[in-house]
Image 1 (cartoon, rainbow, N blue to C red):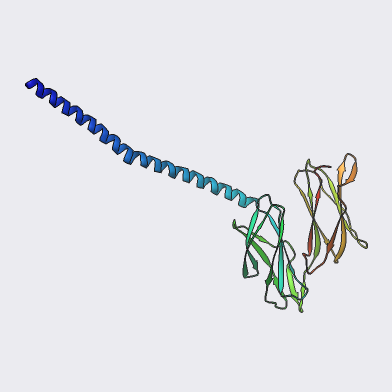
Image 2 (tube, one colour):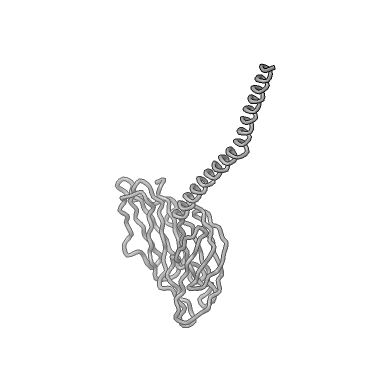
Length: 254
């Protein structure tokens, strides 16, 4: 009788131990493990956010655009803004500022692509300068690359016309760039030093509207060789288009 009572007591104690273990495991699965999973998810979200912020900052730093502002006619109260994405990442233009007036836009431009924004109606004031700034979705702001527009005596005026030449370059090559038309030529061809692999940029200011040729030569051995597709013929007509024309020549395969 006494022995049976002891065995029964031990059995109940064993069952209690098993029940305690099961309760502990239940608590573990219902509280600690879910908490661990939530913490792990939070860590993953944080890591992903840090990565996305890093990528966003990199993309923001890689944005590069050129903006040219021009009136529709010599007396118009409307301006167009031609935007060229010269960077390596797509950009989205969300706002255009002309002086202290902003205009909301929503235009995406692929790398090396262009878009004409506007027309934007402005209040004309005699003797006033009109300065344009373009803002991207990533928060960058770019001032207009073209010369400042002035409205004087009921006509638009820009202080200069020009041809912006970009030569895609590699292997620290040397180039000569010359702009000309039937009555005028560059006083002296622009000659690069050939000290780095960066693309070459050169602005040639011209005096009048009209047709121009852009000649780009590359130093190959001891000779100057015309790049393929050059000379490049362009026409400057202002107002109505940008006062500055972009020209791209590829020197990488020569």
